[in-house]
Structures are given as C-alpha cells and as structure tokens.
Image (cartoon, rainbow, N blue to C red; front, top):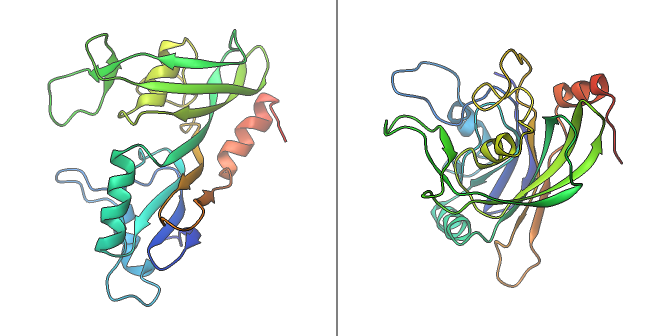
Length: 223
C-alpha cells in the first residue's frame, strides 16, 4: 500500500489528501483495499487509530478529516451536523458556463428506493441543496470551477453540475457517456472551527497529478 499524504495533524485532528480510487469503506462482501486499511499506520504514537469524521466518494480526491479520539469525533460530528465546517472543491466540467458565478438551489432526492443505492436526482420534493459556484478558467470545451456546498447532500456537487448542463468530467454516474477520465473533483480546502478559543483550522490539499495533467490537456490554468 502507498503512504497517505498527511496534510494536518494535532492532538485531536488528522487531515489527509485522499487519492483517487480509494474507497473510504468496504462495500458488502467486497474484498478491496480501502482507507480503513491505512488507519493503523496513522496513530503517530496514540493507542487508538484515528477514525473517519466524514466521507468522500471513491474517486473524489482531497481533504479528508479524521478524529484521533472519541472527543474529537464527537466534536467533528457536531460541526458537520450544524454545517459549520466549510469545504471548497475544484471541478473540471464540460463546456463554458453562461455566468461566471452563481448559486444552484435545487432540492435532491434519492433516485431509487434501494437502500444500497447512493444515486440521487433533482427533485422538488427532495431535501434542500445549495451550491455556490465560481468559474476560475474556461474555454469553449471546458471550465475549471470552484464549488462551495452550503448543504451536504450525497453527490450534491455532481448532481448540481449535471442539472446546470455542465457535468463534471469523468463522472461515470452523472456525466457524459463515453467519458473515460478519472473523476475531476477535488476537495481543495476545509475550514474547521474545532477549538472554541482558537482560530479555525484551515487545511488544504494540492491537486493530484491526474487533475493537473487534465487541466494541461484542456488548456486551462489559473493562479
């Protein structure tokens, strides 16, 4: 197994830059390598291994938080439930957006009643889902977009960009047919108000090489 890149560490919190293709949990009956297989190597002297405070899709890269003890996990869970942890994603999407910035306010519901299915769809009877977007670079074929979810629905960014008519490149579920790229969605930064009397913790994760390579192929760049 490859060594995971730790991008932040203190007594309560670990943050890693999750690579593409690494599930955070094993599916039912699946014998594959997951993030859980790495956790014992991330103790850094503590008696217990850290545990996931949230999840990222298998092919989404970037910032992923882990609590180093029960107190940390409880605090992080509360912050996520109250939507007090802000996340910023970068995505490569198909086409050029009409507006350089905006808000997507479209409710989301599960696409199937199958409890094992995570797939979703835009549905006026679904749960509130709000995403802010800003175009950072674009041409006629593609755009690099900064996405800030104000809610935390499953597959929210992927569903919202599909609904906007600019699906994320490499999205095997909500993207264009025949697009064989790896999913171009990266959690670039998070702000975590973990400590009441300290500044927010800001963690950031560099783009993976595949993302950089795809930007170069598409002729997109930004500072």
